[in-house]
Image (tube, rainbow, N blue to C red; front, side):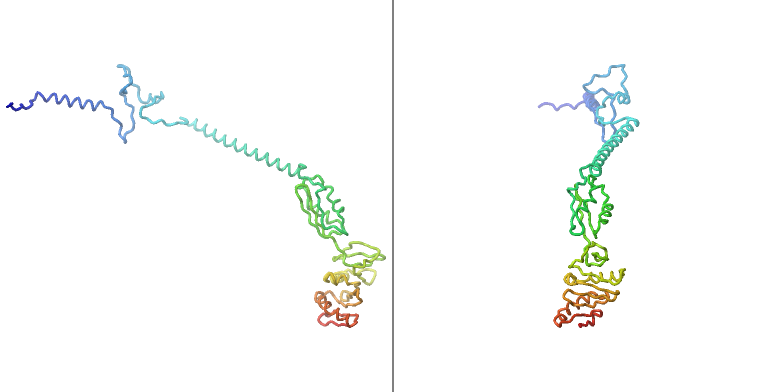
Length: 325
């Protein structure tokens, strides 16, 4: 049998301490990464793989490295537009100037477009009046189309947008026998005028001639002989009483067209004494213009009866109590 190993003595302990010291030096020599809470610092120790700083040469301070634009290991690169207040103000002014120039360009373009459109509409011949494009409606016997065209002729060549429609309306209304009208622009070159003529409803003796009057007692025409299809208004005296004439025209205005065509003559000495003579020989004592609508209805009922009875007169001065005689 072998004798048991002798225990290690104190001579073996220094080697262990040397080993521990070498391990601790290895740990100290190993690069340590900065902790999350610590700020990054520039190490003054030479970096592995880079040439060592010669002895006797001073290591540059971190501030000098920043001034010399030396990239610091581990520091993030931050893009910087400018490093001074003056540069930032210049950049802001340049951006504002660019915006102003762009707005001016858009404004100038819009101004040119609007100006061109205004010139085309208001001053160019693109939308000017052409007489060939004028349309006139409603003219017949007492208003001719040529009369309306004569009014519009001076406006040929004027742009439609610049036409004074009020002035044109005044000139059209001054044409004889125009009772009403409507004028409108018809783009791009035309005008449409729709006319309502004055229509005579009665003839009134004026000396040796006869005036044809409309419902408003306005003379539409003067003829040598009274038309057969119009009632003749016979008023006493050389001077016509306008009130009596107005009453007579008011009565004719409410008559239906078939009954109006049967009126041969209307006589009136006063406003309350109007007499109608029909073409079938019947005489109708109308009285005043009051209750004319009721009198029309009564006449339509009694007229056939009076003719059957060979009577000549119907008194409607009191329409609720008519009399056939």
